[in-house]
Image (tube, rainbow over all chains, first blue to last red; front, side):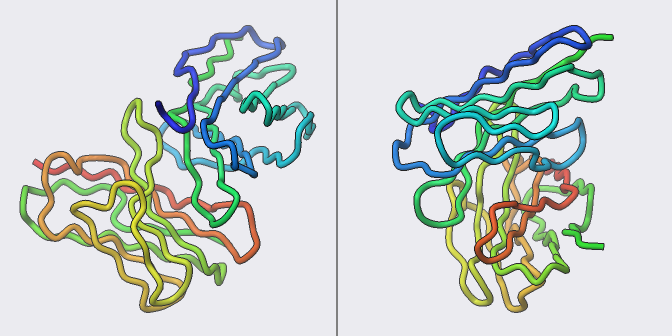
Length: 111
Length: 112
């Protein structure tokens, strides 16, 4: 079983819709959770971090965490073609700096 | 400008020819790490360093070496590259107590 799992997609949504990206993780002691965006041919960039159960909003992005279900999600409201990218879920254990990444979900926003 | 740089950005080489990919950061970060990215497998950690002269293996260290003699530099060494090391490599750094890993632009390596 992979430590961090994501649906590879592609997930296709129309412009202006809500895109919902999901991630599950296997290590129950994980404490920190991150969403990175990676455009084709570019390096990953951090867009959201979340540490406690519930929702965290930043502009059009909302991260949701449910530690009991070992589930973290990213919602993108009012999706734009510029949001088309691969979204990587990353999890950090209780101690240390190691990040474990999922394989990523490809998002395509159609205008 | 705060950044992580990698060189070269693209490299095609042959099996067994030693190579080094350099990584440098100008943010005075303690933590540095190397990842490889392969289709369907995501980013996998090769080696990491908590500070100068402190390095440790990640999940896929076989066939790689690193050194951390200066805080800003963290080179990745392939002593005898093989075709299964063909991949996209990223260096990343993070400050003490921080949560954001800053990634370099990537190095696309092809081993023939």
